[in-house]
Image (cartoon, rainbow, N blue to C red; front, side, top):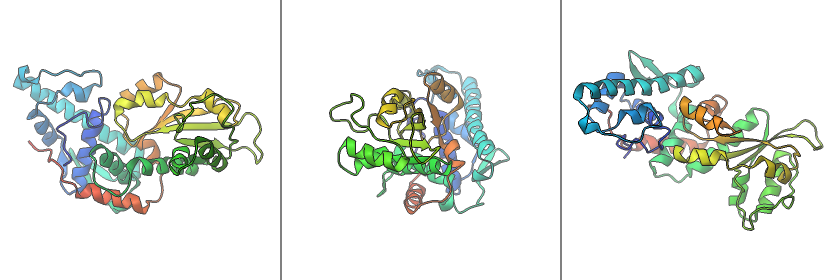
Length: 314
């Protein structure tokens, strides 16, 4: 059952994004949601509206809040959720498969939902968060999407984590990933853990200037997660540019990034970026360049659509 009863399903820093995703899912299932209906639903719950409106608040005393204040808070929270949806539409334009007409979110049907890049990433996000039954692993699917988008952006890219899962040692995974990404693997160039898994990097990427690698190339190292927003601060700091400049032969520190399938809320994006030298690749940035939909992505879209969803109705 997919439900809005726990605002922390995506973690403390993606509560409005969670509700926006549920509004979109209901629209896909033919149950369009009006802003006023969402506000009524929120007013009838014991949810703390500040949890939706600010990632900094973690306490609630909703039973002591006067009804008039709860109604005002519910409408403001619904507006915050719709602002998330409007940002998606503004950034993605024709790649966004929903419309907000008359304060209602509807699926526009411009493309089969099984052929929509946006819906594929939305489904991966929901499938992981709600443990939707599927033969596919959302995190592995999302890693492939990130690597493919980087390739479409003109970079060489390889899944370090995927090579590691395929078996063998860290050294062999590094050799295979670097070969695919046009980098030079030097696994013993720096100290590392004896039983290293991936040393904080899921994706290796490289902008190649020439056929033969010379010192001073433009590399990228990425941590990819489908997990809770509570983990993002830790995850964004896991890749070590100084370590990986030696492991991959770039000589200069590669640029780190964090990739997530969620729509990262603006305040959270600012917070993450201010605390790290890494950038964040979220749903909006990735979907803008994702092209074809693969068979396993169609399967997970169908699995999510089949799930029962709690109506957002008062």
